[in-house]
Image (cartoon, rainbow, N blue to C red; front, side, top):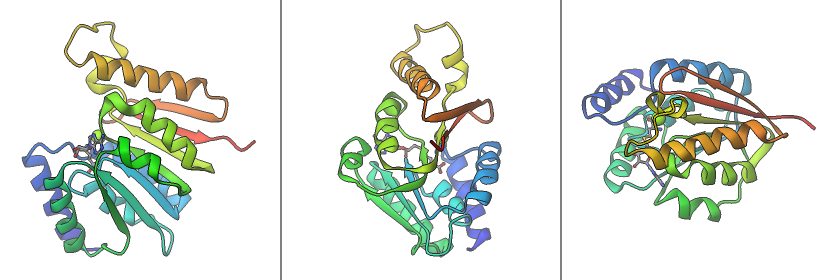
Length: 197
Ligand code: SAH
Ligand code: MG
């Protein structure tokens, strides 16, 4: 892949305040991806393709990433970026709302990366679990949402998001099939591994 182009994509996204994955979050994920060598990754929330492009490095040979984005302008830019970096064979973008697209998918994924509407995280979890391989991992970004999720202040305008992020944490923690860690890297990262049973 063309790393120089990737760096340019990152700089532009940061300048335009597009919420791309933070460096420390990516670093943690990379540790898992290196050993996992996933065949298939599902990403919910493409934005301009930055994280998906980064993940391609860790795919198994012939591995693929499916990623979902509802913002048409971002889809357009993501496609251009993916071409520029030269990874268009490895990334497929589903254009539309993940709430509608996920129920139509029926694949098996080694890794899911949830990074879209925070109010929908419990739904994204349910759909991800349905498609997760028995040794799969689900990552959820922004799980601590600027610290709101762990604070008792819940009157701000983001309370629906906060409620749903808390619900997500509760569900992954209580699910006997999952082993979950919540890390304070970046904006908070939940890592849930499917337990072998
Ligand atoms: N994963 C990207 C950043 C994603 S930002 C990266 O790290 O590079 C979150 C994106 O999710 C935004 O572009 C937003 O438009 C998209 N999004 C939010 N809710 C969505 C939904 N319900 N369906 C599809 N895309 C959604
Ligand atoms: Mg994010």
